[in-house]
Amino acid sequence: LLAAGCADDDGGTSGTGSDSGSASGKKFVLMVGVKGDPFYISMECGAQEKAKELGVELQVQGPDKFDATLQNPLLDAVAAAKPAALLVAPNDVKASATPLKRIQDAGSKVVLVDTTVDDTSIGASRIATDNKLGGTKAAEALNELLGGAKGKVLVISTDPGVSSVDARVAGFEEAVKTKYTNFTLAAATQYSHNSPQTAASIIQAELQRSPDIVGVFATNLFSAQGTATGVRAAGKSNQVKVVGFDAGPDQIKQLEAGDVQALVAQKPYDIGVQGVEQAAAAVEGKTVTASIATESLIVTKDNMSNPDVSKYIYKD
Ligand code: T6T
Figure 1 (cartoon, rainbow, N blue to C red):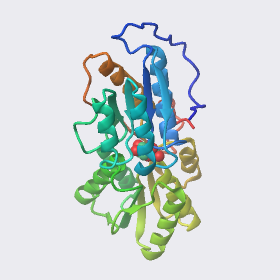
Figure 2: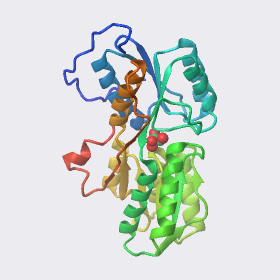
Figure 3: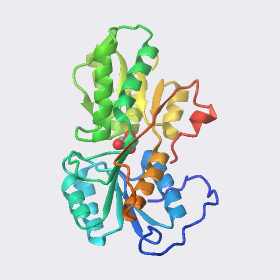
């Protein structure tokens, strides 16, 4: 898994310490949620940058799909390799717990990045976007885009049991129910299993079934990509407002094309940097921050070229 698009080396020097109390020279593993996802590629860039600075050897792995039945065997192999630390984006709040507990109990320091598990004894530190707040921001953005239009708004997520997207749905739904009166939630959240094709089919079917849908919140990169494609295929790009989570290069193209009207961009590079920092602190027996919430920002066609915004566009 190569992060080819990381920014050029900024000249950061590698750590050289090799005393037993230092993380330098130790092996860390970053287990991403899924391979080839610009969100995790950007996280990897940040993690590698920090690893280089600290002299840590960071190996990156990930399953071919966002699916605990695929990620868990990779985690079992990590358990056998006993790295000093594991940074991991678990695929499922419940199913991922057993292999992670085993790794932690065997002495590797575990740091959760991006997603979490329900078992709070797992993870010396947890670093993720404030996803609930991100969902609230998505509802605010949709409200502005709708400009008073009345109707239904649909949520398209990936799978239940993924902590990040579940929290975004919760934040969005709570805001729609308590803050806005023009629009209401369309039936139930639909799940695309992280497949853009499935998200596209879902939105096309739902637009046929419920012509009163005026907006969609798609909770991650792949569901947003497919939703935007589906709305366009249905010929409704001018009528239905789409707010997506994540800001990869393709999402920016969809924003430019008018197929998506707003994106909630995360800061995956920062999550990667802080993940390695916390893992190194844990390995060195230093103070570790148990929970770190990173920020998100709204990207629109109007602000996407502003350097303060464009610097958060993910790498691919
Ligand atoms: O939205 C991100 C990540 O935060 C989430 O946990 C899974 O999907 C992404 O990786 C985007 O594809």
